[in-house]
Figure (cartoon, rainbow, N blue to C red):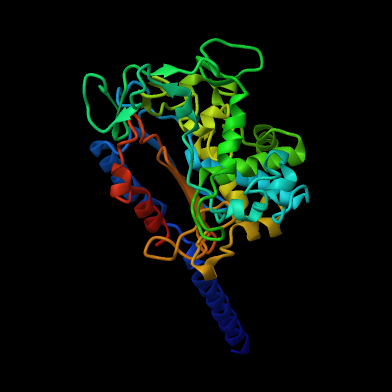
Length: 434
């Protein structure tokens, strides 16, 4: 009887142990089938309503990928279905998956510091109003810089001096670009632009090359762009362009090369700038039909005009990738910089960058990373970023979950904002975190 009693106690202890472990791990449980049904329903509705022509979606954790699916087509001609190896223009997701990732690596290697000042690193800004801006301020968008500058428009003019754009459609302004109509008589500045290759010119589109002398005017305009109170939050493309300049000056290496070295360590290849240098045009999804600057359907070249002016490699945009490559980065960030036994990023740096250091001031922003004030969709520790072209990724370290959604909603036009009006991505994010 004594042995039976002991065995009974042991069985109960084992059962209780299993129960405790099941309870402890219940928050990490992911109902793949239920979530896949929900995502399929959301995607079918989005495709039917024309939110975008196609998409890639991945849901996973630091240990595994739960859902990896492709939907729809490259564009509305429906000639080419979306495949896993296809790459999308990430737009502003480049700010974190490119520039911020490089910054994390350099900070971890003590090659750059968060308190480094712009003017002390990049000599062109030494005696300007933005000389004292720090890398920390640039990454948290607390510099006071304006949101952006349309550098490319100074390369365009009209013979009679009439405006480039008009709010009204007419014979002179026949084609729509965003919410404005484009002057049909636009001419290009041949002092800076060439439509055939020239020595030392920078290729900015398949048939456009830029005189690097133009960059002097770019830097001058940036130096005068801090028009808001320093210390307050204002999201700006210019901040990450300056981060890029600081990192390139510090290392003597271009940002695309720095990023490529990191991606190689991660073992991912379907990610990078200027995708036609490393993948086929067939595997690049098209973005907008640009009736204003490039007069073409953008495919294989960056959609963002500022990044285009900079040759497709920019701190604010320019990165292309497929969801599978991004999923590896998400797993590394969830695993405090570690992947397949290798420490790719310093753990303390990963933790520092994904925090909200200015939350007490009501600024819900990480270093580079987008964070949100907690609400029905986002938790306090969630971090990630979105992109203008219709891209999204977010990570929840509390329940070990990430979501990647890549679309080209700007095809054929950026005026299509249906996915935002429907809270498409945030609804899926809430669903997978329930």
